[in-house]
Length: 423
Image (cartoon, rainbow, N blue to C red; front, side, top):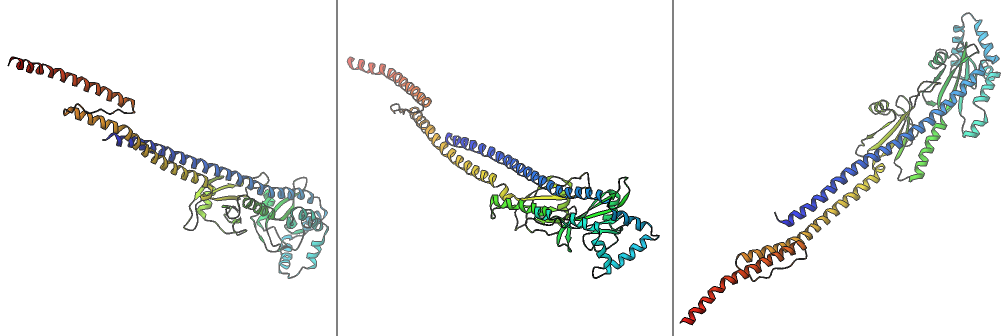
């Protein structure tokens, strides 16, 4: 193999090694960036979900505190005493409930209850208090009412759909466990998305006296998520924003999406199973023909001492094409750099090979000439010290050979001269 080819291949091998190193470096950088983006998104999801949980926890605490006051209210005490004197109390309550649910308008019985002193107090505390509207910009509570220990309404801010509550799941769970928090749903009567908080009412001795229920407007949570998306748009621009937020309930229904608002659509079972089995984690979701891949980070709400686990999930979805744009740019730059280095390596290999191989070829040609008897050819010098030393050595050998040949030819010339003289 020619020396020039060996030199060019050597430089190409160096360029190829640099390329391999670059690929490894890019791969590791992409993985590190992916992990960094995912970890930051998980932290953001955890912090945001903690705020969503806190808003509800604050309402639960307020309802529990108010339930302590209700235990000493005369209206509730008297309601329990009056119903306790009735022989078949459940039959009476069911009859009232039947008339209640069938009534098309508010009856005098309902008006009396809505207008009693305890109802007025509840209404002032939880529905009509101007502080909430002024502070939050919307009414926090859509409805609130209290039942006695028999499950019959004792006080209410407005007409409820029924009178008897003891057969309701929320009432039973609040009585047994102290607190019940419902799933988020749309309250048609109040025209708000809400969550029901029900707490046990008990006296100083721990005796059960009834249940207090508040229908809480979740607009503050929705506003928080909308603000989060708004900040995202302000930071990167509306046309460049690729990060979206989705708030799911424990069944996998979308409570809120920054793409579509309050949808209450059911996400895929496999998708939701993956989320529940890997709490506070991330994964890459492959998009279809019209959608790009997404990095999905998520957090799941944790149990609270005052209530069971809400099971809420917050997803942060980031398109990988935008999330990994810096590493893609770095990769493309490195590819261009590798191609450039390979080209430079080939050119340098060619130049160096010519610089080295040409004087060696000339030297080889000189040796071949000498071997065929051409002793008078001039041996070229080289700018490369080693090759030049070799040329000088060969030149000395050639000089020595010429002298030796000259000595060998001298006796013959002397003999011819002697013969001429004798003749």
